[in-house]
Amino acid sequence: MKRMVIMLIGVGVLFGGIFGFKHFVGGKINEFFDNMPEPVASITATEVLETEWTDRLEAVGSFSAVQGTLLTTEVAGIVSEIRFESGSSVAAGAELLVLDSETDQARLRNLEAVERLARVELERAKRLVEQRNLPEAELQRRQSEVEQAAAAVAEQRARIRQKTLRAPFAGDLGIRQVSLGEYLAAGNPVVSLQTRDPIHIDFTMSERHIGRVAAGQPIRITVDAESGEFEGRISAIEPGVRESTRSFAVQASLPNPDGVLRPGMFGRVVMDIGAARTVRVVPQSAIRFNPYGNIVFVLGEDEQGALRVSQRFVQTGARRGDLVEVVEGLQPGERIATSGLLKLRNQAPVKVNEDPALQPAAEPDPRPDNT
Image 1 (tube, helix red, strand yellow):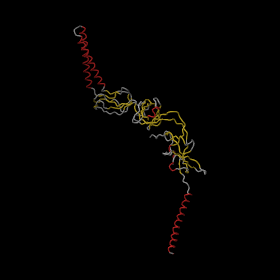
Image 2 (cartoon, rainbow, N blue to C red; image 1 turned 180 degrees about the vertical axis):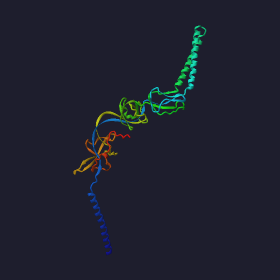
Image 3 (cartoon, rainbow, N blue to C red; image 1 turned 135 degrees about the vertical axis):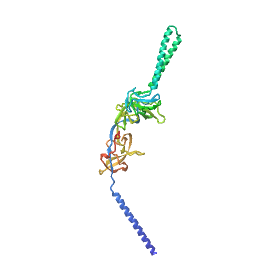
Image 4 (cartoon, rainbow, N blue to C red; image 1 turned 90 degrees about the horizontal axis):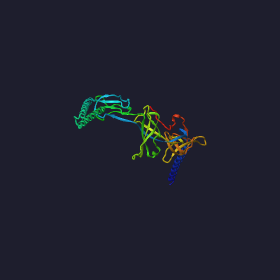
């Protein structure tokens, strides 16, 4: 019995030592974390700005030629002459290609001879009728023969003219698709012809904007291949709305004297609507977008003068480039964090990195560098 009591006392002392040691270690750990300095997050920051914005509609479209076609021959034949250079500019009516017409020319001379003979016989018939040596019906038959011969000559001349391909309008030629001596069937492509000044841009708009778009309305266009903006005006609006997309087609015209805009190029269209209004804007990188609400982190100093951020919900509006409008939640001049938002929490200490190279983009109309 005495031995059992001693064992129980020993076990109690052992477990008491273990629990005491764990309590001592846990207390030291808690003391370390309680006295550990708060980590400071490095961020970039900017002020809430006020600026003037005009509401606008945006779309993307493709350029198309005001006049453009793929030239073809009306009749078949062997190519005997090519009178143009690929990529050259031509005037309306310029001869571009000639098909061999030797057989047609011979046929024309034969028909012209028939016509001359018919006219001679007609004149002879007129004299005989005047002398009452020929009936009036014979004169009418000879007159019909002249008309038929003249029609055959005109038809043959038209056929010969079809052997010469002419530019239907002034413009720029593409790359020729035929060679000398080649046999062309009727309708085979020869070369493309397009006008580039002025030029059209075609785009679509959602049906909800149909009342805000009108013919003659000015637009601005930017393209990736060129710097700067191009200005034009809406020239036509499709009267109906496409059922499949609930959108309507719009076409605008703009001058293109240097020919830098080409059919098929991609363009971004902007239309200003309404009057200018004052808005508060911040970089989009300054907003943490969440399903339950959009958040910004506003900079301020605590009682010890340390820089801290406070979390604030905001209501956003229109977006433009790298900027977003803040409708509610911020005032002009307030300073907010623009990067490092994922590592921030309410009342977290921060330091601001002023290196310009690290500042997020804040352009209303950002464009890539053209190289």
